[in-house]
Amino acid sequence: MRRRKYLIGILLTLLLVFAAAGALAADTFRFEQKSIQVFEGETFQPALVREGAPAEEGEISWSVGKDTVLSVTGDGTVTALKKGESILKATLTVGRKSWKATVNVKVLRAVTKVTLSTAKLQTYKPTDSQISGLLNEEPEGDVLLIPAGKSVKLAATCTPSDASSTKVTFTSSDEGVLKISGSTAAAKQAGECML
Image 1 (cartoon, rainbow, N blue to C red):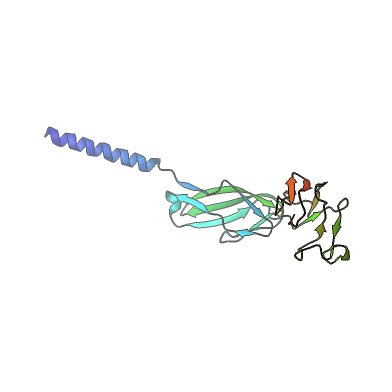
Image 2 (image 1 turned 135 degrees about the vertical axis):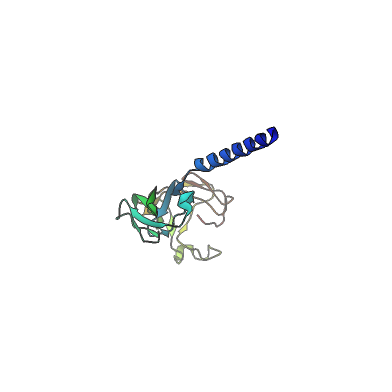
């Protein structure tokens, strides 16, 4: 008898522990990402985390804080319209209960063109007669001539000027020919490379 009471006590304790654990399991309805960054013109469907009661089927409605920055369709497809920030909101309704999730979306403007500032540089078009016969291959753009042992300062402009990031990093396809250090290009020896 005593043993039976002991076993019943253990079973009741276990039931209470499991019931409490189930009761403590929080309902979760949120966006998977804490914030989202996209470029103008991109379309995406954000992922949602649904646990507990929100994991049940239900109806999700969508809205945006700034409809000039983002648009959203009934199925949650979001389009980034223009540079800026907006809140994206999802509301899940299951029966009479509802849960809301919000995420901040930052829409970036991409650089579409980078132009090397050539005012102080000796540049030529690939078809220029002054450099005919100097090149092994037809270049993809203008030709910059730097005498071996000399250095030049490089500068570039980005289009559009209000792009989200206009930082330009210069690189050389052959550091043995043209060594880049920040915005300085140093011609190490005769040769060709891409800048």
